[in-house]
Length: 231
Image (cartoon, rainbow, N blue to C red; front, side, top):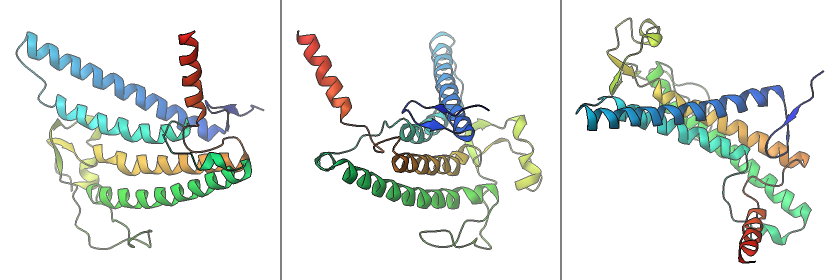
């Protein structure tokens, strides 16, 4: 029987958690690589051949948006988000844990509302229905006009996505990439962020992590390094 591995924060990880972690890290690495490659190619084309990939800038912007959203959830996992803990550090360990749990529950609540809003925005582009309810999903609305025919400005349609045409575009061909594809990061990223909030809160509850933000220990490490440099 395989034992659960540990992540960078020292928490044990389930098989599902490892899969999500691998997806995040791989996606971030691939996106960074593609952004660098496309930018490099465009610079060479412009200054050497007086040409350019007309769709290159739009693709880089889309990839950057995906990178940011992936980064938000990944930073929750590795405890990289900044926060103010001056008052919290005045409390005893039990009080700090309680405040961390309250923060985690607030973040989970925020994650649920963010996921609802993201789904409601993305759903019409996928010929799906948004949810009812102002703050929390209370079912699905009816009769919302889909936006599946909306496409990107310059990005050409990729053959691997042709299956979307009979599914959401009444069989009509897309000349440009439909917006449903780049916009998919909104509900996917929100769901991933919600998962990380739940994971982090459970970590605090079990005692495997102290908070959801960067610890003040980072400041102590910087101060120690500065003192060593002076010596």
